[in-house]
Length: 387
Image 1: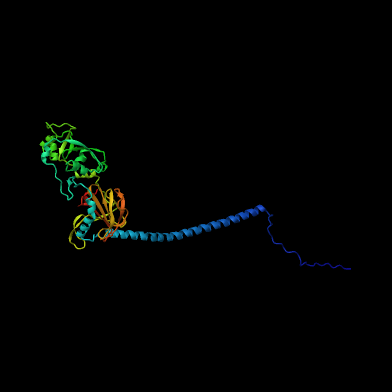
Image 2 (image 1 turned 90 degrees about the vertical axis):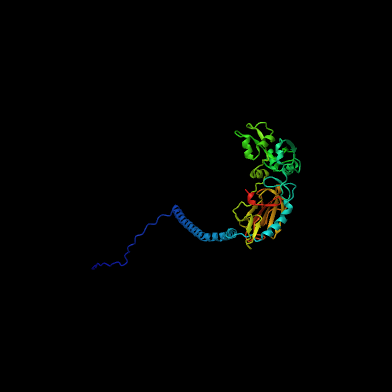
């Protein structure tokens, strides 16, 4: 039998297997690391988003803030501008005639200006109720030596009444002779040295002569010899002489009387009208102004110019809301056109204490304080007593 050999190609031979990575064995540590990394990334994303939102919010606030500040400032600035315009941009007019003002003021002040027994002028000279100077000692009295007596102050005494009681014509005699720094502190029981005539004591200094003192005080040389009962014109340092007829200067007297008025307004103000003769701002007719007008914004604080008792609080068509304060020794002050009154009748107010606020009530076309000073029923220029 013949064997026949043959070769059959196998069409089902296996195909080449593609290469692949060998799987990494499972690990819990690796899984934790991957989870932590993923969480950190998400946290950073959230933080970045929050930061971006904050930046956007800040930008929005910064855009709105200037507008909000402007809205808040506008009312304040407008009010300040109105007050400034009212007070300083145009003259303040006191819109009543001088005659009407004088008549009303005289009526308003009469009861308060004359409520005392003794009166004296700005030089300290005792005067009668109508302002007439009281008779003083004649020059013949200066030919006699001066004598002294003691007096104990009693309840109800004043420096004026004591002076009048002993025939003195000027209150500065008692003040200077007793070194009274402030008559307000003159109390019951205090002992005073009272000379027999008006004058002042003088302590001789080195180099001074009787002739020089005669010229300094305008006193006759012989009167100095007679009043001091001197046998010789030779003086010694420290010797005390009495100078007949001498008196304190106005400034020293005002200080001793406690009459140093302070300005009733301490804020910025403008003198819109002075004391005395002026032309009426409306009619142009010559008139008399009874005080001074201090122009300043509405609501400005008004203080008592001197300590005293509030004698009147009220309203008039001339002064609007006004206050009258009675002070020592015949002084009264009036404060007019107030927008607000902060005191009441009968109250005692200290110098510098608030009594009201500036306004434009009554006959007035702009905010200002009308300030008047009376002395023993007579008008006084406020600028002569204010410091």
